[in-house]
Structure formats: C-alpha cells, structure tokens
Length: 103
Image 1 (cartoon, rainbow, N blue to C red):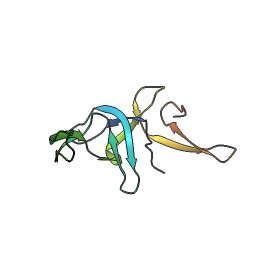
Image 2: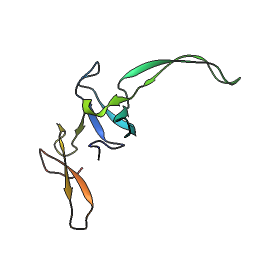
Image 3: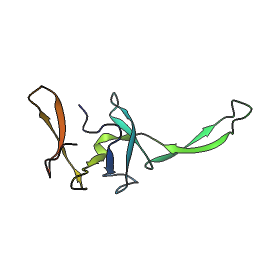
Image 4: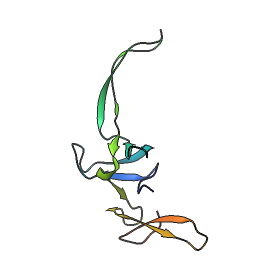
C-alpha cells in the first residue's frame, strides 16, 4: 500500500522542485511514481496529428518518485509521515503520525 493516494496534497522533499506543494493527479503504483500538479515540468515535442491541433513543444508534468514526496496533513498543515491503522471492521485507514488525525 502506497502512502500517497490521488487527490492528496503533497510536498516535494528532494530534487529541482524541493519545497513545492501540489495535488496528486495520477498514481503509477507499478513503478512507484506520481504526477503532481505544478511540479516537475518536462518539455515534450508533439507533432500535429489533426488539422485543428497545434504542434510544437508542450510543457507538462512528468512523474516523480513517491519517495521524494511527503503527505501534507490537513489538521496540522505540515508535511508528515503516514501511519496505517486497522479498524474494528477490518478496513485500513491512513493517519498523520504527528497529530493522529485520519487522512
């Protein structure tokens, strides 16, 4: 189970975008990477494939490894480690290790 899920607010811990925060748009669990909004931009050269489409150099977010990301807790609004707790009904919930609030 990854410590990061879609729509989480995360903070970048290392790399060229260290310190930036953003929302997780997509997760790739097989390679442990995530796409974060506004972080790790890369340029992609695109060919015009349709008559109404524009070709050229497109700037968009590239995947970043989840080990370089930390979840930002809504309760204490700090980047924190995530713990996993099992409830009485058998379901798993993630919680903030600093303030113990369920994420």
